[in-house]
Length: 243
Image (cartoon, rainbow, N blue to C red; front, side, top):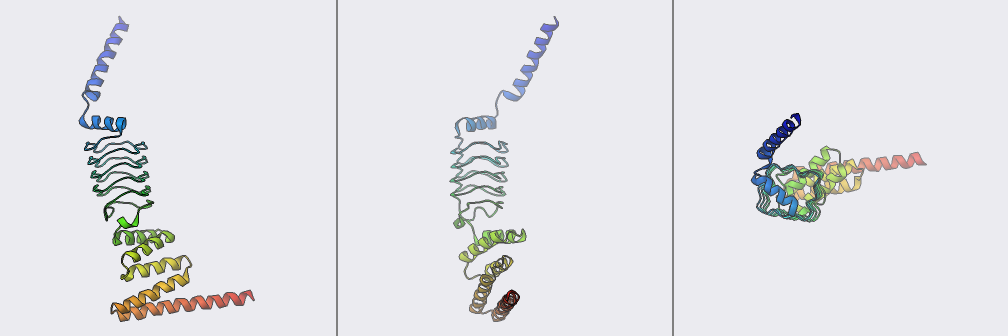
């Protein structure tokens, strides 16, 4: 009798569990199942899903709602995310090589430490996202502000080699802007690249003259001359000590 009672209790419990949490499936559950099963879920509703460290390489998620989703650590190589809504989505430490993100909404999207090698983006689309320590981003998709601010961030973190790369890219984007020249000079001094730093300052001085900023030009040139003088004096000192 006790055995039968236990069986009835188990059956009743199973009915409660299955009817309340498994059946019927919500639209989101169906879409998630479809994605994991077929890797195709265009125009699906996947807001807030949590599927970390998942292989979704080659998946199609065109115009899909992925707002507040967590896909961190996942393989998203070659994924078609055109027009997808990735607002505040967590894509940190993901691989997005050759992924297509054209038209995607990237407001507050977390790309920290992600690999975006050969990924296709809209120009300036990363401006509202966090892509610190991300690799492989083609500079043609980044604005001057993007690369300049990234350089400042790297400089503040004492990652001067990375900062230099970003400031050089900023110089390419706006060759008539003095700020990245001065910033690049500073990063090069931090790395002991004195001659290159001085050359940046002389270039900045000449540019200031061109822009009619004579006082700035004089001050920048004086700074370059002083650094060069200190470097030459140090060189003589080293030679004297060596002899």
